[in-house]
Length: 412
Image (cartoon, rainbow, N blue to C red):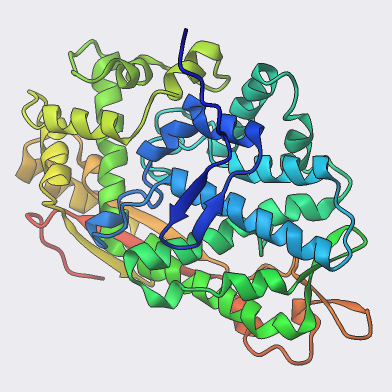
């Protein structure tokens, strides 16, 4: 007879948020499920640890943090007189706990690379549907909240909006593990300022400067961490090495890898993934990729070999963040030089230019709303005492460029 855990009311010790309690047996069983346990082997910030060595935290820890923030927020809202049933509370906690189930290896880095044209959000929804069937439809309300089909909008807004609990956790968590203090936000104060009017999420007016600090912190984290030139470079190389491996496999070449990774290298079209695809995906994590890269360092294919060595040994190309893009002609010239120096047939695997954009606050889509003392509700950009919002509504665009050091180049 298999061992069965009797005590399902556990406590996790989170270095960022402190003690996180599990007080519901269904939630405990979901955390114990292989779909969720896989998140322990998925890096939260991709390959940011190439720049910030402490950034080795996982999607598992982030998801638990989001769940804890949801528990705290719902209690605060109930204390303010917001009517929340036990079913709604449980469902919203489950919805945010499972919101990242669909992330593949290294989180956003390989999204749309292994499972082509299928976003991690769609994979998360598919996994949640599978879990709902496995747990006798006990996740139906959680799915409605996650998909924004539930009429009480604030539950979904706590999971996905411009001031959601997902962002409140990852900013504080990523700031902690990277050591980048500019990203640290006062999530406790912001949560304390949350309220509900007409079933929509609002912020008490005295929380305006905490919100502006949150928006600026998120912007700085993008430019200092998520869009750091070296992080973007190694992530580009990782995507390219997987594309090369996939190309070689589909040309009939032998490219050794784990069975789970090999499955996706052989697949040509995964627009509508089936059960077998999802079963394989649920077993795929960062370790499959790293183990493959170590083996590919000695592969006969020169492109695969160079890319793999560059990632494993952190022998990365030159990279820049520039305000104006290189011309197509210049990029083509650099690719040709790379092909000649590396003696390869295609320089696109090594020469890269990509647009990076950040919009700190979008006042056109789901604007943040505030509850004034006179009970009037106003959008952030319409408040008289806002300080930074005008500038935060401007999209900032830069271009990331990486070119092998052997090529050498001068900015235009």
